[in-house]
Length: 600
Image (tube, rainbow, N blue to C red):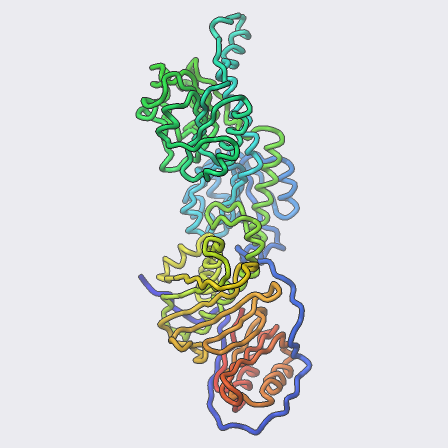
């Protein structure tokens, strides 16, 4: 696999190196443009920096399926909204190249062709609901497109519909209603079964499944559940027993399905599993049609294995008019109404609109489905460390001499927290972003960082250093090392031979605290000049004067040295980019042995 090369940067760092005799001491005066400290605004971390940077030009959102008015109103405050419903696949591919975001429900297929047709402009796909099986997540990730959903707003609505179908099925409500409207009065034909004391197996104990279980408990049912990822303590808290799939289907009087459609769950209920069920079992599905083999269900109904079924979802929607399953007398059907309450429709619309607008602004999305799933409170805590991680990556790669192949990066996290309490996926993604973006034309974000690194032969390993002390803050420091490369700033090479930079967060602001073996302390904003010099009086004033002459503002300055009057590294934070002439003057200062300008 090809290594990651370091061609000429889009904004290349400038470096000069010289060695001269020791000059006489300079006056230690401080120009007016040097400030050793100042308060800095806390910046918002950007996932999608390209969209965020141009947000003032109002990005365009294509709403391809009906969305609640409250969500549309929110979108229109921040974006240009194109509501185009019932698009054919060809029409969607034609429109998508003009859009920054796409919002769909379950009826629109967002496949690889859609992402390829977008030409890289599509940054966010919002699924107004929970399931995302109609979105090609692999293609979205490869194209750096964030996929967000609305997993909470319709939870109660879907659970209520599941319970409604459960009760309606048990008491033959739909069939009896149709019979009466047809002029018949068949009380004996539609004798139902009671729910009290019956065993309900909830397959999938997520948000909807657990809410169905709560309501079923209130109806006096005995509830069991199968979900390989559900925590046992959460199930016990509402009186639900977690069991194996085999036990669940073999002992249940009623089965309610609440799992996503994946390769593992596709046609999970089939001829083989129906044969293992209790005769007379009743099945409710408000999840995804594809989890049931529909032809096998018809056979199970005809054989009497399944007494009744109540279905809100189907493999093909809408199903064919002559569908044997839909027309079966012992099947109750609804047209995918799980989330169809007035409250849920508005809630989903607002939730997905907020997620899409936030993602376009560059905010971290807690509902992202093709990126590390990080709780909102953790995102808030990690924000300054996320910015630190990206900037350390940018610094490290700019220190690599042109032509060197970046293949191996090691990241060390020093923290007092236990490994299980520190999720570093987000930080690793941002270090990858920082390393790759300055030296390539590829746009990297949280979504495609790992994929992009793999494609370029970049191997990133992580190490955690456990510290003693209070775990109040998530991290004490982050260190980035690039091995087997040459550096344009020799002082950045550590004793073990790697380019090494280290930083930490102070008062919410990322700081560079170490370069190679030299301790420094400079705020990571604007740009940085690193100088290796002979430690002597007047150096700060001399360099500051050169920058001041060009009206370049110095935000921070720090000097790290081995010992007095020996070698030292001076780190200077500047708000503006100095001219080549100013940088050349700095390099010509006799006591400065080498320097490099790094753009953040």
